[in-house]
Length: 230
Image (cartoon, rainbow, N blue to C red; front, side, top):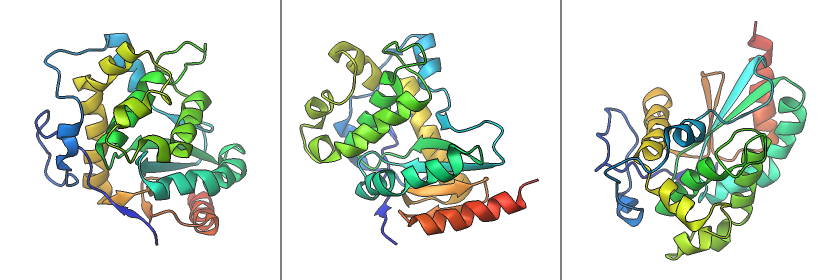
């Protein structure tokens, strides 16, 4: 099983680490230092931290992905396996899909925050949003990963892939509220599911699939969850 060990950027200087949380990378120093004041408006922050989901809210099964935008195995999953899952289970109303960021590097943390701020909303405004446009941006970031994720110049490189003005992107990256939101997902993954690698997946809050498995593995787990669903 191919997977990347998870050394997530928790920004320990910003928040205390809860017992059972995942180990944190010291790469936090590579990301903008914690701001003393919130750099996003309350509305911007609320929209940025809204749930990101695909599929019917009434679907009997929920698949949650914990992923890092700088993880090559995550990029492989989104290029090769996720389209099959989407066509067979999400688009057909069987599965609701939830994406959560577990950044494994400073570039991944920056890209996660940028994506949360930049994805167009339903009206097409360049602001925070949910839905297919957000997932299209994630796909684009995974596809362009080699350009921005593995260089010391990631901040400059990333600007070409995040549809925000430079000032808006800097405000997003400096937001303590948005950092805290991502950190919360990191802590939950470690506390609730002992997740220590990306990608990892949780099916209906119970079974965990670790690594970029093939489509047959996901189909088997999702079919079992569908049979067990009320």
